[in-house]
Amino acid sequence: MSRKENCLFSGLIASLSLALDLEENRKLYHAWRVALLSWPISKIICPREAGIIFYGALLHDIGAIGMDDHIVHKAVHGTTDAIEIRRHPQRGAAIIKIIPELKHAARYILEHHEMWNGSGYPKGLKGNEISLGAQIIAAADLFDVILRRVGKIPLEGMLNKIRSYVSSYISEEIFGVLLQVLTTDFYNQLQSDQGLEEAMKEVLKKVPPPSEKLNDTTSTTSALAAVIDAKHQYTAGHSERVALYALNIGSEMGLNLNEMEKLQRAGLLHDLGKIGVPRSILDKPGGLTKEEFGIIKKHPQGTIDILSMIDVFNDIAYIAGGHHERVDGQGYPYGLYRDEIPLMGRILAVADAFDAITSNRPYQPTRNKEEAFRILQKNCGSQFDKKVVEAALEGLKDVDLI
Figure 1 (tube, rainbow, N blue to C red):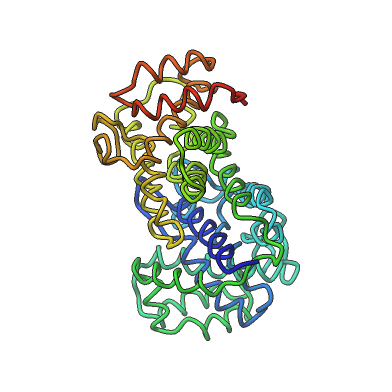
Figure 2: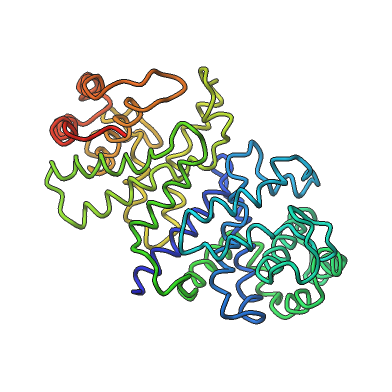
């Protein structure tokens, strides 16, 4: 596989991981910290598995997607007995299998809450019954939880805190390697948002591909879009359809191949920031409160912030995040006016609306293609760009609604 494909793949996984740790537009960096600590430990203990363990660490809590409160808060406060929490390893392992290249990480995700003394979950595995990758992720996860509980303390104090969990939560071997890699400089870097971002950029350049037969990045992006849409029942397939509709519109408008590739990627990832919105709001059948709608309105900014942090996605961040801007300047997140909105962002706005209108949603009846076209035309010049709508009427007239 090419270096470019590997960079895109690693960027995709890092982006998804950060989206999982987005809390009302605040980045928690839990999974990034776990992955960045797992990486050097893995390189010492099992270097051939270091890459797949790194990816597993990035997505270790993916099974907790959509909980009303982030799972790390529950871990910090010791409230981890709820059925939904104890099921998140199994759910995460099932979700990760959507991405074929990461299927070997599923076991690590399944077992990352097993404990060395057998008191963990979901299976109560003990000692070396637990996969080495899961043991490493568990130790790094423990580090982050302790850090959040005690705050910034000297490294020696942190190591003493972790040492108290040896033989119960983690093994002597894992702790011994942790002592090697957790230098003062690295420890300080893990406590800084800027340090974490810099460290992640460096590791993403070095991490090996999860498979030499990595599928093309379009299929991987589609798989991640499926993960994004799987958060709640009403949007299954939404991102894939938005990308498809956007490509039909873009083709009608004469976009070149490079622009079409950007548009497809932006369409597939446009709702990345929505992962940080609780399912209770997304699935609410009735009207939203002002506060709830305010949370929903933050998701395009979340998409922009996440994609902007990954070098290979800088060029699509504002396209993907522009799908709720309006040409009359009344949209969000920035209230851009007419041509201030990137053309491909204006295309996504129409594609996104077309799918929302023709899909089953809790707050509206499903409508057919002709009704959708009438709504798009009615909102020309206010919500939507007139030329984009004209292209949509032509480019989408023969599409099959899924």
